[in-house]
Image (cartoon, rainbow, N blue to C red; front, top):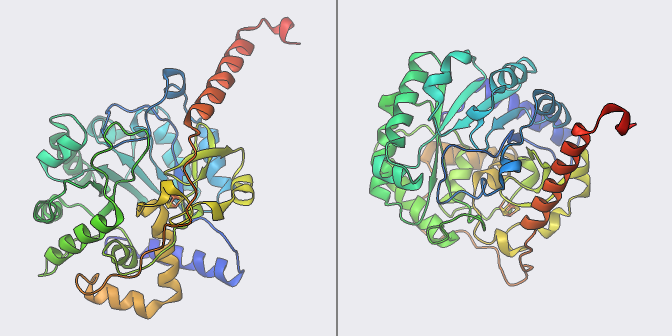
Length: 383
Ligand code: SF4
Protein backbone atom coordinates (compact mmCIF):
# COMPACT_ATOMS: atom_id res chain seq x y z
CA UNK A 1 0.00 0.00 0.00
CA UNK A 2 1.54 3.32 -1.12
CA UNK A 3 -0.26 5.48 1.47
CA UNK A 4 2.13 6.61 4.26
CA UNK A 5 1.22 5.47 7.77
CA UNK A 6 1.02 9.00 9.18
CA UNK A 7 -1.52 9.92 6.48
CA UNK A 8 -3.61 6.79 7.12
CA UNK A 9 -3.57 7.49 10.88
CA UNK A 10 -4.59 11.14 10.48
CA UNK A 11 -7.40 10.34 8.05
CA UNK A 12 -8.57 7.48 10.30
CA UNK A 13 -8.72 9.83 13.30
CA UNK A 14 -10.59 12.43 11.23
CA UNK A 15 -13.18 9.85 10.10
CA UNK A 16 -13.52 8.52 13.65
CA UNK A 17 -14.19 12.03 14.96
CA UNK A 18 -16.86 12.66 12.33
CA UNK A 19 -18.49 9.28 12.89
CA UNK A 20 -18.60 9.85 16.67
CA UNK A 21 -20.11 13.29 16.07
CA UNK A 22 -22.53 11.65 13.59
CA UNK A 23 -21.66 14.20 10.91
CA UNK A 24 -23.94 13.28 8.01
CA UNK A 25 -21.63 14.49 5.25
CA UNK A 26 -17.98 15.41 5.55
CA UNK A 27 -15.19 15.86 3.00
CA UNK A 28 -11.99 13.80 2.82
CA UNK A 29 -10.13 15.47 -0.03
CA UNK A 30 -10.34 19.08 -1.18
CA UNK A 31 -9.89 19.22 -4.95
CA UNK A 32 -8.37 22.59 -5.72
CA UNK A 33 -8.29 23.74 -9.33
CA UNK A 34 -6.56 27.12 -9.25
CA UNK A 35 -6.75 27.45 -13.05
CA UNK A 36 -8.15 25.65 -16.09
CA UNK A 37 -5.33 26.60 -18.49
CA UNK A 38 -3.21 23.63 -19.60
CA UNK A 39 -0.16 23.12 -21.81
CA UNK A 40 -1.66 19.92 -23.27
CA UNK A 41 -5.01 19.23 -24.93
CA UNK A 42 -5.80 15.59 -24.15
CA UNK A 43 -8.62 13.91 -26.11
CA UNK A 44 -10.27 12.51 -22.97
CA UNK A 45 -10.16 15.74 -20.92
CA UNK A 46 -13.33 17.69 -20.19
CA UNK A 47 -11.66 20.39 -18.08
CA UNK A 48 -10.06 22.81 -20.50
CA UNK A 49 -12.80 23.62 -22.99
CA UNK A 50 -13.27 27.26 -21.97
CA UNK A 51 -12.91 30.61 -23.74
CA UNK A 52 -9.58 32.41 -23.20
CA UNK A 53 -10.87 34.95 -20.61
CA UNK A 54 -11.83 32.01 -18.36
CA UNK A 55 -8.62 30.09 -19.07
CA UNK A 56 -6.76 33.25 -18.00
CA UNK A 57 -8.43 33.26 -14.56
CA UNK A 58 -6.42 32.14 -11.51
CA UNK A 59 -7.40 31.50 -7.92
CA UNK A 60 -5.19 33.75 -5.79
CA UNK A 61 -3.07 32.46 -2.91
CA UNK A 62 -5.64 33.91 -0.49
CA UNK A 63 -8.53 32.18 -2.30
CA UNK A 64 -6.71 28.81 -2.22
CA UNK A 65 -5.90 29.13 1.48
CA UNK A 66 -9.44 30.37 2.17
CA UNK A 67 -10.85 27.24 0.47
CA UNK A 68 -8.65 25.05 2.70
CA UNK A 69 -9.89 26.94 5.77
CA UNK A 70 -13.55 26.58 4.77
CA UNK A 71 -13.25 22.88 3.93
CA UNK A 72 -11.96 20.70 6.79
CA UNK A 73 -10.70 17.87 4.52
CA UNK A 74 -7.23 16.74 5.71
CA UNK A 75 -6.01 16.20 2.13
CA UNK A 76 -5.71 18.84 -0.61
CA UNK A 77 -5.19 17.71 -4.21
CA UNK A 78 -4.21 20.52 -6.57
CA UNK A 79 -5.19 19.82 -10.16
CA UNK A 80 -6.40 21.90 -13.08
CA UNK A 81 -5.64 22.62 -15.93
CA UNK A 82 -1.93 22.33 -15.34
CA UNK A 83 -1.19 23.69 -11.84
CA UNK A 84 2.51 24.31 -12.60
CA UNK A 85 1.38 27.13 -14.91
CA UNK A 86 0.23 28.98 -11.78
CA UNK A 87 3.10 31.28 -10.76
CA UNK A 88 2.14 31.29 -7.08
CA UNK A 89 1.81 27.54 -6.71
CA UNK A 90 5.01 27.13 -4.60
CA UNK A 91 3.61 29.61 -2.06
CA UNK A 92 0.19 27.89 -2.09
CA UNK A 93 1.79 24.47 -1.45
CA UNK A 94 4.05 25.76 1.31
CA UNK A 95 1.20 27.52 3.12
CA UNK A 96 -1.16 24.54 2.82
CA UNK A 97 1.55 22.31 4.32
CA UNK A 98 2.01 24.85 7.11
CA UNK A 99 -1.72 24.46 7.83
CA UNK A 100 -1.10 20.73 8.40
CA UNK A 101 -2.74 19.55 5.15
CA UNK A 102 -1.51 16.59 3.09
CA UNK A 103 -0.85 18.14 -0.30
CA UNK A 104 -0.64 16.51 -3.72
CA UNK A 105 0.12 18.40 -6.93
CA UNK A 106 -1.21 16.61 -10.04
CA UNK A 107 0.87 17.50 -13.07
CA UNK A 108 1.47 16.40 -16.63
CA UNK A 109 5.15 16.95 -15.67
CA UNK A 110 6.10 19.00 -18.73
CA UNK A 111 7.31 21.80 -16.42
CA UNK A 112 8.16 19.70 -13.38
CA UNK A 113 11.93 19.35 -13.86
CA UNK A 114 12.26 23.07 -14.61
CA UNK A 115 10.26 24.09 -11.52
CA UNK A 116 11.35 21.39 -9.06
CA UNK A 117 13.77 23.78 -7.30
CA UNK A 118 10.85 26.02 -6.25
CA UNK A 119 9.52 23.25 -3.94
CA UNK A 120 10.95 21.50 -0.90
CA UNK A 121 10.50 17.80 -0.05
CA UNK A 122 8.10 17.33 2.87
CA UNK A 123 6.66 14.17 4.39
CA UNK A 124 3.12 15.42 3.65
CA UNK A 125 3.79 16.52 0.08
CA UNK A 126 3.40 14.35 -3.06
CA UNK A 127 3.83 14.94 -6.71
CA UNK A 128 1.29 12.99 -8.76
CA UNK A 129 2.49 12.64 -12.33
CA UNK A 130 -0.11 11.94 -15.00
CA UNK A 131 0.90 8.75 -16.82
CA UNK A 132 -1.78 6.77 -18.67
CA UNK A 133 0.38 3.77 -19.52
CA UNK A 134 3.58 2.99 -21.40
CA UNK A 135 5.06 5.30 -24.03
CA UNK A 136 2.64 4.48 -26.90
CA UNK A 137 -0.40 4.46 -24.57
CA UNK A 138 0.45 7.70 -22.78
CA UNK A 139 1.55 9.74 -25.80
CA UNK A 140 -1.67 8.66 -27.56
CA UNK A 141 -3.74 9.58 -24.51
CA UNK A 142 -2.27 13.10 -24.27
CA UNK A 143 -2.19 13.55 -28.07
CA UNK A 144 1.49 14.53 -28.15
CA UNK A 145 4.66 12.55 -28.82
CA UNK A 146 7.47 12.75 -26.27
CA UNK A 147 5.34 13.50 -23.19
CA UNK A 148 5.93 10.03 -21.68
CA UNK A 149 9.71 10.51 -21.84
CA UNK A 150 9.42 13.94 -20.20
CA UNK A 151 7.17 12.53 -17.45
CA UNK A 152 9.60 9.69 -16.72
CA UNK A 153 12.55 12.12 -16.63
CA UNK A 154 10.57 14.31 -14.20
CA UNK A 155 9.77 11.33 -11.96
CA UNK A 156 13.48 10.45 -11.81
CA UNK A 157 14.42 14.07 -11.08
CA UNK A 158 11.75 14.29 -8.36
CA UNK A 159 12.97 11.10 -6.69
CA UNK A 160 16.62 12.21 -6.95
CA UNK A 161 15.68 15.48 -5.22
CA UNK A 162 14.07 13.59 -2.32
CA UNK A 163 10.36 14.05 -3.13
CA UNK A 164 7.54 11.55 -2.79
CA UNK A 165 6.35 10.94 -6.35
CA UNK A 166 3.16 9.09 -7.31
CA UNK A 167 1.59 8.56 -10.69
CA UNK A 168 -2.06 8.89 -11.67
CA UNK A 169 -3.21 6.62 -14.47
CA UNK A 170 -6.54 6.93 -16.29
CA UNK A 171 -7.66 4.01 -18.43
CA UNK A 172 -9.92 3.98 -21.48
CA UNK A 173 -11.55 1.19 -23.47
CA UNK A 174 -8.48 0.57 -25.60
CA UNK A 175 -6.37 -0.41 -22.55
CA UNK A 176 -4.93 -3.92 -22.83
CA UNK A 177 -4.51 -5.73 -19.47
CA UNK A 178 -1.10 -7.19 -20.43
CA UNK A 179 0.21 -3.77 -21.44
CA UNK A 180 -1.19 -2.07 -18.33
CA UNK A 181 0.34 -4.77 -16.07
CA UNK A 182 3.72 -4.48 -17.81
CA UNK A 183 3.53 -0.68 -17.47
CA UNK A 184 2.75 -0.89 -13.72
CA UNK A 185 5.80 -3.18 -13.33
CA UNK A 186 8.02 -0.40 -14.67
CA UNK A 187 7.00 2.07 -11.97
CA UNK A 188 8.79 0.40 -9.05
CA UNK A 189 12.31 0.57 -10.59
CA UNK A 190 11.65 4.29 -11.16
CA UNK A 191 11.09 4.68 -7.42
CA UNK A 192 7.41 5.68 -7.74
CA UNK A 193 5.88 5.71 -4.25
CA UNK A 194 2.25 5.07 -5.17
CA UNK A 195 -0.12 4.53 -8.10
CA UNK A 196 -3.59 6.01 -8.47
CA UNK A 197 -5.58 4.20 -11.15
CA UNK A 198 -9.09 4.90 -12.39
CA UNK A 199 -11.34 4.59 -15.43
CA UNK A 200 -11.84 7.86 -17.30
CA UNK A 201 -15.07 9.77 -16.71
CA UNK A 202 -17.12 10.32 -19.88
CA UNK A 203 -16.89 14.13 -19.89
CA UNK A 204 -19.58 15.48 -22.20
CA UNK A 205 -17.13 18.13 -23.52
CA UNK A 206 -14.18 15.77 -24.13
CA UNK A 207 -13.19 15.78 -27.80
CA UNK A 208 -12.96 11.95 -27.94
CA UNK A 209 -16.25 10.33 -26.91
CA UNK A 210 -15.44 6.90 -28.37
CA UNK A 211 -13.02 5.55 -25.79
CA UNK A 212 -14.76 5.87 -22.42
CA UNK A 213 -15.39 2.66 -20.49
CA UNK A 214 -18.87 1.55 -19.40
CA UNK A 215 -19.27 -0.09 -15.99
CA UNK A 216 -19.24 -3.69 -17.21
CA UNK A 217 -16.13 -3.09 -19.32
CA UNK A 218 -14.43 -1.29 -16.41
CA UNK A 219 -14.95 -4.20 -14.03
CA UNK A 220 -13.79 -6.78 -16.58
CA UNK A 221 -10.70 -4.72 -17.43
CA UNK A 222 -9.70 -4.25 -13.79
CA UNK A 223 -10.25 -7.94 -12.98
CA UNK A 224 -7.90 -8.82 -15.81
CA UNK A 225 -5.30 -6.28 -14.65
CA UNK A 226 -5.47 -7.36 -10.99
CA UNK A 227 -5.24 -11.04 -12.04
CA UNK A 228 -1.90 -10.19 -13.58
CA UNK A 229 -0.94 -8.30 -10.42
CA UNK A 230 -0.86 -11.49 -8.37
CA UNK A 231 2.40 -13.48 -8.45
CA UNK A 232 4.29 -11.00 -6.26
CA UNK A 233 4.29 -8.07 -8.67
CA UNK A 234 3.64 -5.85 -5.64
CA UNK A 235 2.19 -2.71 -7.23
CA UNK A 236 1.97 0.07 -4.62
CA UNK A 237 -1.45 1.67 -5.01
CA UNK A 238 -2.08 5.07 -3.39
CA UNK A 239 -5.73 4.02 -2.95
CA UNK A 240 -7.82 2.01 -0.56
CA UNK A 241 -8.08 -1.75 -1.18
CA UNK A 242 -11.88 -1.59 -1.18
CA UNK A 243 -11.90 1.00 -3.97
CA UNK A 244 -9.79 -1.41 -6.06
CA UNK A 245 -12.23 -4.19 -5.10
CA UNK A 246 -15.08 -1.94 -6.32
CA UNK A 247 -13.27 -1.44 -9.65
CA UNK A 248 -13.05 -5.24 -9.93
CA UNK A 249 -16.85 -5.47 -9.59
CA UNK A 250 -17.01 -6.82 -6.04
CA UNK A 251 -18.75 -3.95 -4.27
CA UNK A 252 -22.05 -2.19 -4.97
CA UNK A 253 -21.17 1.36 -4.02
CA UNK A 254 -23.06 4.63 -4.32
CA UNK A 255 -20.75 7.60 -4.84
CA UNK A 256 -19.88 10.13 -2.14
CA UNK A 257 -19.57 13.32 -4.21
CA UNK A 258 -19.15 15.54 -1.15
CA UNK A 259 -16.11 13.41 -0.20
CA UNK A 260 -13.98 15.33 -2.76
CA UNK A 261 -15.47 18.85 -2.93
CA UNK A 262 -14.01 20.95 -5.71
CA UNK A 263 -13.10 24.65 -5.69
CA UNK A 264 -12.44 26.22 -9.10
CA UNK A 265 -12.37 29.76 -10.49
CA UNK A 266 -16.18 29.42 -10.78
CA UNK A 267 -16.64 28.72 -7.05
CA UNK A 268 -17.52 25.45 -5.27
CA UNK A 269 -18.55 23.02 -7.97
CA UNK A 270 -21.83 21.09 -7.70
CA UNK A 271 -22.03 18.21 -7.18
CA UNK A 272 -18.52 16.80 -7.66
CA UNK A 273 -15.12 17.01 -9.31
CA UNK A 274 -16.49 15.52 -12.54
CA UNK A 275 -19.74 17.42 -13.07
CA UNK A 276 -20.12 21.20 -13.09
CA UNK A 277 -23.90 21.57 -12.74
CA UNK A 278 -23.81 24.69 -10.63
CA UNK A 279 -21.54 26.65 -8.30
CA UNK A 280 -21.83 27.68 -4.67
CA UNK A 281 -20.17 30.76 -3.20
CA UNK A 282 -19.05 28.98 -0.04
CA UNK A 283 -18.25 25.44 1.08
CA UNK A 284 -21.12 25.63 3.59
CA UNK A 285 -23.55 26.56 0.82
CA UNK A 286 -22.24 23.66 -1.31
CA UNK A 287 -22.79 21.15 1.49
CA UNK A 288 -26.17 22.49 2.58
CA UNK A 289 -27.84 23.57 -0.67
CA UNK A 290 -26.85 20.83 -3.12
CA UNK A 291 -29.61 18.35 -3.86
CA UNK A 292 -27.28 15.37 -3.38
CA UNK A 293 -30.03 12.78 -3.92
CA UNK A 294 -30.48 13.89 -7.52
CA UNK A 295 -26.94 12.72 -8.43
CA UNK A 296 -25.11 9.41 -8.51
CA UNK A 297 -25.47 6.18 -10.45
CA UNK A 298 -29.14 5.29 -10.80
CA UNK A 299 -30.24 8.87 -10.14
CA UNK A 300 -28.79 10.80 -13.06
CA UNK A 301 -27.94 9.75 -16.59
CA UNK A 302 -24.57 11.52 -16.57
CA UNK A 303 -23.57 9.32 -13.61
CA UNK A 304 -24.50 5.97 -15.18
CA UNK A 305 -20.96 4.79 -16.03
CA UNK A 306 -18.99 6.70 -13.41
CA UNK A 307 -16.58 4.62 -11.29
CA UNK A 308 -13.98 7.34 -10.80
CA UNK A 309 -11.88 7.53 -7.62
CA UNK A 310 -12.94 11.12 -6.91
CA UNK A 311 -16.53 9.89 -6.51
CA UNK A 312 -16.08 6.45 -4.96
CA UNK A 313 -12.81 6.46 -2.99
CA UNK A 314 -14.52 8.24 -0.09
CA UNK A 315 -17.28 5.59 -0.14
CA UNK A 316 -14.65 2.84 0.00
CA UNK A 317 -12.69 4.53 2.79
CA UNK A 318 -15.82 4.94 4.92
CA UNK A 319 -16.83 1.34 4.19
CA UNK A 320 -13.36 0.17 5.29
CA UNK A 321 -13.80 2.09 8.51
CA UNK A 322 -17.18 0.45 9.18
CA UNK A 323 -16.14 -3.05 8.05
CA UNK A 324 -12.48 -3.49 9.06
CA UNK A 325 -12.55 -7.28 8.57
CA UNK A 326 -13.72 -6.90 4.97
CA UNK A 327 -10.96 -4.33 4.45
CA UNK A 328 -8.37 -6.63 6.01
CA UNK A 329 -9.44 -9.55 3.84
CA UNK A 330 -9.04 -7.47 0.65
CA UNK A 331 -5.73 -6.06 1.93
CA UNK A 332 -4.39 -9.59 2.48
CA UNK A 333 -5.83 -11.33 -0.59
CA UNK A 334 -6.16 -8.45 -3.07
CA UNK A 335 -9.35 -7.72 -5.05
CA UNK A 336 -11.27 -10.83 -6.09
CA UNK A 337 -10.81 -11.44 -9.81
CA UNK A 338 -13.27 -14.26 -10.48
CA UNK A 339 -16.76 -15.41 -9.49
CA UNK A 340 -19.99 -13.43 -9.73
CA UNK A 341 -19.89 -9.65 -9.62
CA UNK A 342 -21.76 -7.60 -7.03
CA UNK A 343 -25.28 -6.52 -8.14
CA UNK A 344 -25.39 -3.43 -10.32
CA UNK A 345 -27.44 -0.36 -9.39
CA UNK A 346 -30.58 -0.27 -11.58
CA UNK A 347 -30.68 2.57 -14.10
CA UNK A 348 -34.40 2.57 -14.87
CA UNK A 349 -35.23 5.58 -12.67
CA UNK A 350 -32.39 7.95 -13.54
CA UNK A 351 -33.29 11.47 -14.63
CA UNK A 352 -32.21 12.77 -18.04
CA UNK A 353 -29.08 14.93 -18.37
CA UNK A 354 -29.12 18.72 -18.05
CA UNK A 355 -26.75 20.75 -20.18
CA UNK A 356 -25.61 23.73 -18.15
CA UNK A 357 -22.08 24.38 -19.46
CA UNK A 358 -22.91 27.34 -21.74
CA UNK A 359 -24.98 29.06 -19.03
CA UNK A 360 -22.10 28.92 -16.52
CA UNK A 361 -19.58 30.08 -19.11
CA UNK A 362 -21.77 33.03 -20.14
CA UNK A 363 -22.33 33.99 -16.52
CA UNK A 364 -18.59 33.88 -15.77
CA UNK A 365 -17.70 35.86 -18.89
CA UNK A 366 -20.21 38.55 -17.87
CA UNK A 367 -18.67 38.68 -14.38
CA UNK A 368 -15.16 39.05 -15.88
CA UNK A 369 -16.35 41.83 -18.25
CA UNK A 370 -18.01 43.73 -15.38
CA UNK A 371 -14.93 43.42 -13.16
CA UNK A 372 -12.70 44.64 -15.99
CA UNK A 373 -14.96 47.60 -16.76
CA UNK A 374 -15.05 48.60 -13.07
CA UNK A 375 -11.25 48.36 -12.83
CA UNK A 376 -10.89 50.67 -15.85
CA UNK A 377 -13.26 53.35 -14.44
CA UNK A 378 -11.52 56.48 -13.10
CA UNK A 379 -11.69 56.54 -9.27
CA UNK A 380 -14.16 59.50 -9.11
CA UNK A 381 -16.52 57.83 -11.64
CA UNK A 382 -16.71 54.69 -9.50
CA UNK A 383 -17.98 56.60 -6.47
S1 SF4 B 1 -21.57 9.23 -9.99
FE1 SF4 B 1 -21.15 10.66 -8.33
S2 SF4 B 1 -18.98 11.17 -8.56
FE2 SF4 B 1 -19.64 10.25 -10.50
S3 SF4 B 1 -20.24 12.00 -11.77
FE3 SF4 B 1 -22.09 11.31 -10.70
S4 SF4 B 1 -22.20 12.58 -8.84
FE4 SF4 B 1 -20.11 12.75 -9.66
